[in-house]
Amino acid sequence: MSFDLVLFGGTGDLAWRKLMPALFQAFRHGTLPPGGRIIGVARDDLSDAQYRELIQSRFDKVELAKRPSAEEFARFAALLHYVRMDLSKPEDYGRLATLLKDANADTVVMYVATAPTLFTTVCEQLAVAGLNTPHTRIVLEKPLGHDLASNRTINETVLRGFAERQVFRIDHYLGKPSVQNLFALRFGNALFEPLWRRENIANIQITIAEELGVEKRGAFYDSTGALRDMVQNHALQLLCAIGMEPPINAHADAIRDEKLKVLRSLKPWTPQSLSQHVIRGQYSAGTIDGVAVPAYRDEPGVNAESNTETFVALRTEIANWRWAGVPFYIRTGKRLADRDADIVVNFRPAPHAIFKTPAGAANQLVINLQPKDGLELHLLAQGADNRRQQQSLAPVQLDLDFDKRFGAERVGAYERLLLDVIDGRLNLFVRSDEQEEAWRWVEPIIDVWKADGEGLRSYAAGTWGPSASSAMIARDGYCWSEEC
Ligand code: BG6
Picture 1 (cartoon, rainbow, N blue to C red):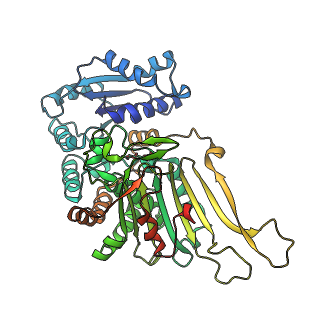
Picture 2: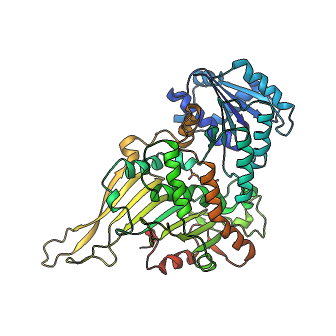
Picture 3: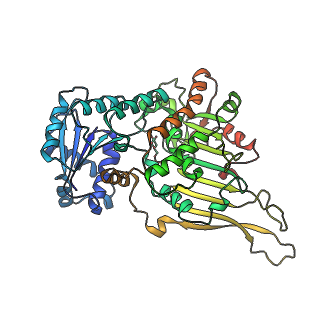
């Protein structure tokens, strides 16, 4: 099967950091279908040869194991081509059309890795130039809009030129091996399903913590913030994966229908829940791994009086028969104490205690997403001190480390997702109605923050966020996993 992959933003940050390395890995693993071309598109005046040199220089900086040899890069470079285009000029699309027509590939992938402001223009112009043929697929990177209305405008524009089955909305969290394992845990094993409900589960905590700050993306981040950057997409997708009903099969729409139902069941916000159950914070100067780091407001590209949040913690519920009354906590932030993404499922304690157990002890299932990919099952067992008469139990842990079991060098998120686009598999991509529902749910938070300049709390870089986040969860009688 031949393919053309057109990379709008071919010299941009995403192509540089994620897409080219992922495409090279797929090439190296032999999974990239033969007979393909990768066509970088940008405004710079470059020849194919210059574009290849530019991409080669990108690999000089990668770790040795992932660096191509000269001979290997030469074979990969043969796939690379370049077209100079000003995406706002309709006449420039003709040049791309000619190049694509020459090859007449079985599949054409249009990957729009540009500034979000160009998404609608690119989609419209592709349609005008007749480049929206039935064998074309379009890939859109997040963020898709900054609120429900702008998201709808993008979706409507895209869907005027392309059918929904041609649109691949990326949420790279869905491509992570750990998220595949979450689906496998829930829907490939019968063990947990009977326990997976309100009768047995006290609360669920989703944490995506980063040590990194905003790096070179200060200007983008300052107009975005943690709610739009992480909660509206990655965290809500994880919440869907943990809370959804078993789909009837593994087809894309069966999975997406169930995720949509979760999003529709999220408890609507009230003025009271908005004020008590949503915490936003911004980091001040602090220390990460012993190194002093600046405050968010001192980062390059960030407004010195910025009120953008770099941390969000919130509590919600999925209002349906399975989950009614079970709190789901979401927490994400930059410059936190650790790089750590996990989902902690806290089971209810045994209904009647005949043994001595540590206060509050109960079973826990931890799904580790990052930096390691694995499962921990926390049980209570007779500890080492079993000579005593009275029987007392101690917590023990069963560990399943997928990195050790399967090797840490599994297919990365972007590699997996790019291959899925080329093969036309939509399972791990977000449908427009899911995305709109997620925006609909976060919008009241955006609105209340806009109206209230007071609620932003400061936290020192290198901590777990503002103390209000711990206070919020403590009001329910629980604590974040690292605090208990
Ligand atoms: C991106 C966000 O979507 O995800 C970034 O825009 C964030 O701000 C990144 O750092 C986190 O991804 P990962 O895979 O490193 O957890």
